[in-house]
Image (cartoon, rainbow, N blue to C red):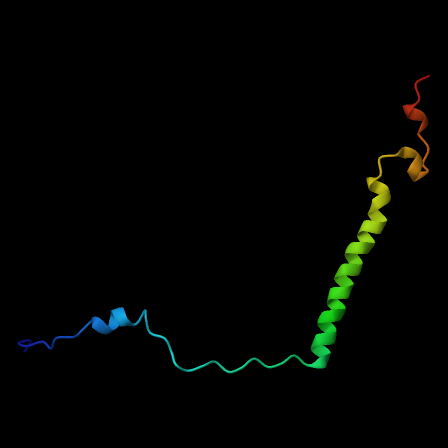
Length: 79
C-alpha cells in the first residue's frame, strides 16, 4: 500500500526568496487638477494655522509684564 514514495526536490523553496518578477507594476496615475488644488489648499491652511497660533500665543509667552498691559492684582501687594 505505502511501498514506494516519490522523492520531492525542495531546492525550489530556497530559490523562492531570490525570485524577482519580470512584470512591471502599472504606472501611477497623475493627480488631477482638483486633487493638486486640494493638496495645495490643505498645505496653506496648515501653515496659516501654525502662523496664527504663534501670533496669538506670542503675548502669552512674553515675560515682560508691562508688554501685556495687565495690572497686578491687589492680592499680590503686601500692605
